[in-house]
Amino acid sequence: MQASVSLEELSGRLSNAGREMGFSYFSLVQRSCSGLNLTGVQLSDFPQDWVEKLGERYYYAHDPVLERASNASLPFWWDDQEFVEQQTDKHRAFMAEAAAMGLHNGLSVPLFIPGEPAGLASFAVTGATRPPKDVEPIAMYIGTFGFETGRRLIAAQMPHPDSDEELSRYVITMLGRGRSAAVIAKLANVKLHEIDSIISKAKKHYRVNSTTQIVVHALRNGIVSYLEMLEQQVELPQTELNRLDIRPNNVSGVRPH
Image (tube, rainbow, N blue to C red; front, top):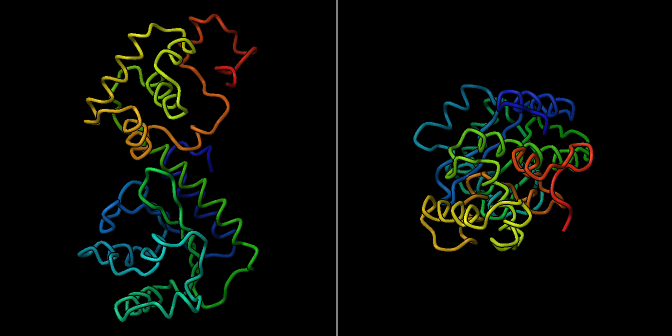
């Protein structure tokens, strides 16, 4: 999953993974903060007629699965009694149309990353029979890493506020870990004014006043990932490795700290 180099490849991997679990279709979407529009990651192999239907006048705004995902923290099946009982008439009409298109039942996995609009990975079946119950943890794993990979691929297509993209990402990642500009400069072996310049440009780009806000916006836009904030090692740009005269077979980046 994480080895995907394009959204098309990622979509194919997700589709194959869904079928191996016993599902017929998959969908991986991200909802905007306003809750109405879809944004960011949008991948699916749902029937084309259904996809076109969802795009008509924001029809997906009536989707009870998307609505449930914004409040749920655990995977849920579309035929769960509690989920069905909470549906409105519009919700039931929506699910009936989905079933008519071949999406009779499914398992949905809510996805959350701090500073990000909520995501949702869904795996659907044609027919009422559920795949084995033990697919739930597998679906959670696939959905989570698919979402993270999708964000990374989309981020790679986005402009960055600084020309030295790798150094900028390193700076923002280290800011997210609570490091000061002076400490980052020392770790990266660059002048403090270079780090200050990157931070100033990022503030101007995002129209914010604090480094905390920079990190939040960078997470939201996919410039850096939450997982990177937790990793024990962050690779320096290759130019910085050269300046430090560190041989690749000695280290892969900055020492753990």
